[in-house]
Image (cartoon, rainbow over all chains, first blue to last red; front, side):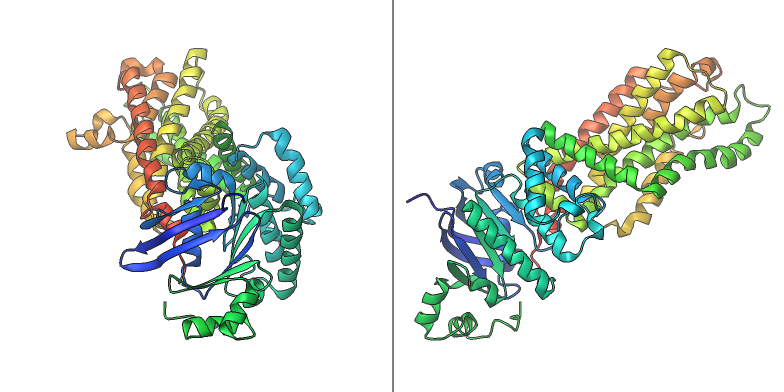
Length: 250
Length: 266
């Protein structure tokens, strides 16, 4: 058995007096498709930012790809890809220029970066748009470029933070196809946060997060069986006492 | 780290070259000053000075181009944060100080390029014929003052929450820096308090180097450089190093730029 891709123990984060993440114990296996389900304000993004070394934990420890998030931030960042909720592309640069910029930030030499960029553009159906500035792209295409940017350096763990937020249903479907193909081709560990149950359904395992605490953890089938209900939505209601759809008073 | 810094500089330059309005404003501004301020002040100076006021303005106008070019480029860190691009830089496997260095060198490149483009027209236009040594010294002065202004601009940007107080920056940073730089009149005319303020201003040292470089022929009548060249260089290096050292941790601080960039929503 290989080491866990993500291993968090008692991880927590406060912003002033606000407890964004209370106490999280979590192990994500290598090559797992892991879903992090919870309403807005549950602490999903805080968790991702802690694991990606963008925030310092208030308590607890975490290792990502075998590296400690506090001791070895650079090592962690080298091993992960992160697609943020909102696009982080430079809207005034072209698709290709954005990917080249990322390649340089990740210290990829040109001879490695150029073929990878060409391959990703082809794989994501962006070949024709490579010279378009990002501003001119639809939301769905921008997301695709964000993901291409996230995996350009071939990370071991890819974090997708609400990747389909703000996309229309068709763009969403296209994006899911893309992510599925990607996982099949690479065996990448994917850590997905979402507040849509249907997006958590295909995950190998799902963690249900509510108000900064883990409410349930298991495969979608297990969770439904344990709670004696037929949907993840009902699992959430059974575990937390309130529905997922209505944001909690966070 | 070198590749990341290079990438950040290339991005800054690519963005700049794509913004026609910004280029036109930056290249046109000094000529507007030359014509309007030059005409007015030349009348006031007429007959009293050994130097044509329009010639006297050249080092100051080049300093002004450097300041607008480098300061505004460094301030783009604030818009980078709003647009999310700063996140891309902070999640890359590079240190915060590499991001700070890249942004500062990008600002240096832009300040230098714009000042050189303006100099190529402005210097012959007023009939200045600098020596080769003078031209090289001028280039050095432009690069150093771009570096110092860029580093201080980054410090300012890292401590600002949003670009909304941009007008405040213009009124309380850009114009005082310009008027207290010796760009429009010699610093020696100031009283002790204003003179002390002027020498807290990196632009004053940059303009002074440019006066050494371009107005050496008028040094005897008091219109050349006012400080020893070595003092100008040391001051600019200190401003650059201090600005960079102070800005890098601000980029990393959770309460500063990073916190604003990564705050959890609702």
